[in-house]
Image (cartoon, rainbow, N blue to C red):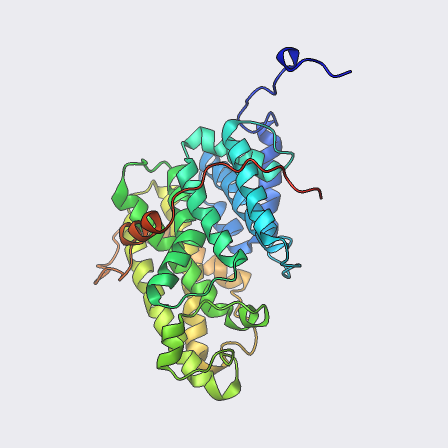
Length: 347
């Protein structure tokens, strides 16, 4: 016999879905250690409170990415059928996390906790989820503006949330712009490094217009006779990366020392990835560019002295695309969808 709904007790809302904070932090630490050795190393430089919150936010980003791509901590892509349902599940679980309801997934419970502690908003989360949705719909950039928007969703918007976690005020638009610059720089380095891997997965992130300018036929980006043209395109990409990176350093200068050190260490490591790809030229994709642990530690050491000196160089001309211009396009092109009401698909 079913009990009348009026006498049933509802699940009480609690940040973290009722899970213990220390348990969520432990799970998040394991996630970042498995998902990104570079970010894991840089995160150790934060003070404890910031470090734990960075881990909690990272765990959600990693889990969303894995769900969207049907993979495990950035491994091989799984079966891409049913991508729309997976994006719906991400939105539903994220909404439950915001409400403080249990999600049965530690990464989403972790997000609910850090969102409550730091004031992350649904709009911020949706900007990131839209990036996963672009990948799920087999989206490809036609123009540089399209590429900038993609980089904003998958990395720049994450940088904005990370800045909030580090204590940047939500109304400090200039600092959030610089955090977005850093995220975009990271993503441009990733795109440059992973051209061959993305091609094997039938994903394309280099603008079609750039490919046309270099006379690279559709589907032929990795063909040996186009290797010099590809190297030229990627060099162009890295120049964009360096411009965003330089402006991000201005923002880092305003952070507390430990946060500044961590951010500059990550910037140096990812910047090294992009520059290594450019230096290799036509051989950049013979094997994957990897920054070894010893070199990472050298970047951490250099970042320490850079953070201590705290005199960033003049970054020169600002990036062609920034958070403000990208957001105009984002907000005009598609409204933030309401929380989905569809039930989660059975596992």
